Picture 1: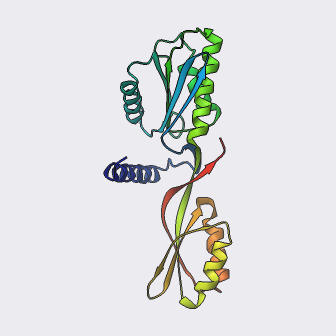
Picture 2 (picture 1 turned 120 degrees about the vertical axis):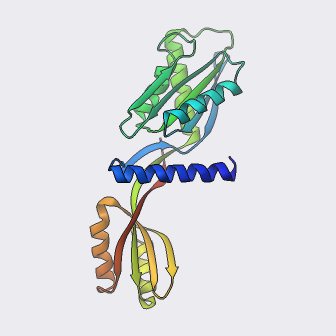
Picture 3 (picture 1 turned 60 degrees about the vertical axis):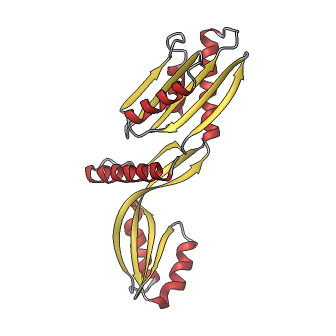
Length: 237
């Protein structure tokens, strides 16, 4: 991915998060894939290649599917599914020539079982000469998807508020040490006339964080709320 494309995606995602914040639809936390992934398995001489990507709109999902189809134009099938939206509003599955319900739906069911959001999967099959039957196909596409997700990695995105804490330099050592050994994460430290600590705090913990900082600094801290954004943490699928 070029630096320009990465920057454009970053701006787009931030604008989307700002829109969600204003409309009050941001989820406190949810799971999705880490990013692009690819994994191949072989079943009865057929190659099943899972391609996985994050997609926050149906347009992004369709563009990814078409890209994989173009890349694998000689494949027997390019089956796909995606799950998009805070409340899984958009769900689509495509068997791409496999018997109805034996490919796209099993892919989608794996995404649902793992409680993933904003995820698109294409499983490309190169037929190896041995028919698997309906049950075999369902298991094969499900397995290809599961192993593809494991290879790609899953993250939990937590909605965090950036809290700004301004203190005198005499309090910096104590405050920084306490923060680094706490459940909170320091985003950045600004060394100005006074020190400003930017800290990631979960939305539901703003009041307790503020109270803790006031006690920690004997009431000498100035605390204000900043913007919100998602932090990602890799988890086991």
